[in-house]
Every structure is written in structure tokens, then in C-alpha cells.
Length: 273
Image (cartoon, rainbow, N blue to C red; front, side):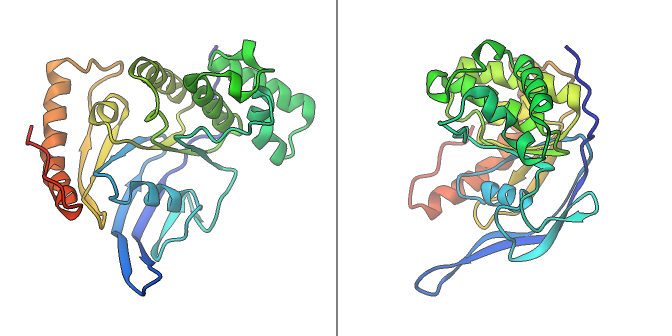
């Protein structure tokens, strides 16, 4: 089934975007140093960095869930000032409503947009077909596996036709086989729709497998250390020589930041690869 989405992906621009927090005892913690970044329409951008470097904070700012401390983010010509139905979000913990069945979860955003009941049911079933879950439309989330729940979350996000989709470690809690399957499915859906995707992960292999471009972040306070464009065609073979060359390049950039992160936590740094 070839679904061509009418709402094309939009570009993002970040200018001087930063974030700091004040603690209860008056200390200021700098989470993100000023970031300048342009993301093209329809680009699949993956952000990688040490734990605690501000990846999720950055994504939450772009999604309008957290205000920045300075600078701005724009999606197209629109300044990000809060959540918007035009921006979809897929979380690691699925964020499904347990009291609703699968199809009602997929319909939720459509209902908020005021789509009539019959039309939103048709749209929801189309997207459940896209992720292979039409037979589970009337099931509750508790009756699904973790991979199936995440497929519902992906269907729900794409169903509202957002121009940009943010994904925060969406496959991090899944087993290796399910994760690989959903990576493949996500690429297939993205290639059909060409939405702009910003994807957070700790997995270097996942980043290379999915990304048009990888943004590597420093240890906290997070800033952009380097960017690597991935020119390999899809589907990508993680054991190919070309893939492994990029993997070594990414790890070479990350190893210094991982060592910094471990030192800040008082742990011995990991061995160099």
C-alpha cells in the first residue's frame, strides 16, 4: 500500500538555542550550550551523545514541551512556543492510553483535530494496516507486546499528518530482533511519507542504519561536536566495510565525550575502541 502524505516535511532552524536549570539550593546547571543547526525538509536526522548530554532536553524544546532559556527554534516560519498538532512525538515508553483500544489510540489526535468520526476511523484503519495491526484494532494496550505498542504509537503519530516527527529512544526498551524489525518498518514509512524526522538514540549502529545525517553531541553541557552525513543507500548492511568505516568514525568522535561523561560521574572511562 503506497500512502503519499499531503503534508510534506518542514525544515527546522535553531539559533543560539540553550537551556539551563536552577536547583533548589540556588545552583545553575547548564544542560545545553547555544546550538545553531539547520534541518532540511524531509531529512532523517539522528542525534547521538553520552547519557545526560541534553539530547532529550533538546528534543523536548523542539517539540514545544520545554521552553528554552535562550535562542529560538523555528519549524518552517513558525516560532516554537508550545506543543502543536503539526509536530508528532514518539516516546520510548509508548505513551498509549490504557483505557482506550488500539484504534481509539490511533484516532486520538484526529479527534483533537476535529476530524469526523467516520473519517477518522477510516484514516486510523489505514495507518494500522500500514504497521500491520488491523487485526488488533479492538485490543487494549495491555494485550500487546512492546513492539506492537510501539507500532501503535508510530501509527498514531503519522495518522495526524504532522510535518515533523520527534522520536526519543523509541526502540531503546525493545529486544534486538524487534528493534531491527521496527527500524526497517520506520524507514519504509518514512520513505513513503518523507516527513522530517529527528531521532534520539544511544546506539551508533542504529544511528548509521537510519540517518541521512548524524549529529554528535558533547558531554554535558551539550553542544554539537560534529556532524556526519551518511551517503550509503538503503537498506544498509551493518557488517559491510563501508558501514564499519562510518561506525569507527562516529566512535572516534564520541570516545572523548564518553570519557568526560564517565569522569563527571566519578566512574572509570570505557576502553577505547
